[in-house]
Length: 292
Image (cartoon, rainbow, N blue to C red; front, side):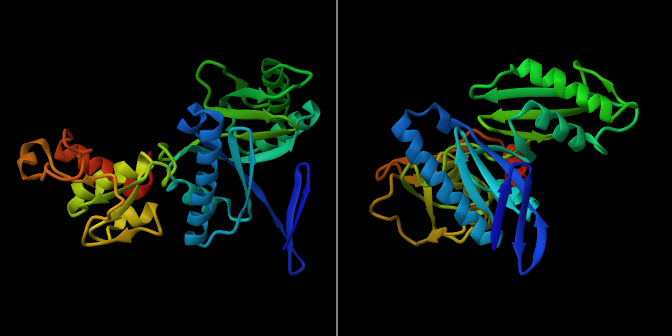
């Protein structure tokens, strides 16, 4: 397989066949609040987790990293997005068209990207942001690219207040990314950055409690092979006893039945203790669908 990267012209040539390659822009959340050494460690763990999830799902992709972003290049972008929706630490992803940071290139790419995406009579807006040093401001990018999009869609109109379609331009150093949607991901901290806990994962409330600890970066060892937990951790380990190196035990008890919890041993975590059954059922269903 040969990756050809030449600005906006990106293809993979495999066995003599040319296939289009897309960029999935990956944003993390809480990692950005950490000190530089901690952030680098968390980024490394996040990248490992991304690779593990892609491998478990059978999705081939190349991962590169820039300032506060990861980039996935693949001929299966929807597969990449589906995988990233199950990786803790990722805030959102977007399927983007990539070009250089040259303003003319941005305008041409944004205009072409907009064709077929803005219905006749619809209002649209172009929102731009940038990182790095450039001979233009974010406001100028939005204005000039917006003019190019308007020329490409003469039956649409600009609406900066409540647009029907929003086209985003994100300029990062010598590259620019054009997209029209954000796909929310679970957020939280990368799995494996906060130690290990043992989870009593019987029942919906037990599974969700363990899942919530995973979202806070804890690697979970469960007492049962729970579907929800394995969905977010393909390498989930199970055991009928608490590992000696675990930081505590996770239970799915409600506040009405905490009397059944053993408080005498290891630290106890009760993430769903104050949640109603309806709230647990709703969050569990959303987690199973990877909708956030």
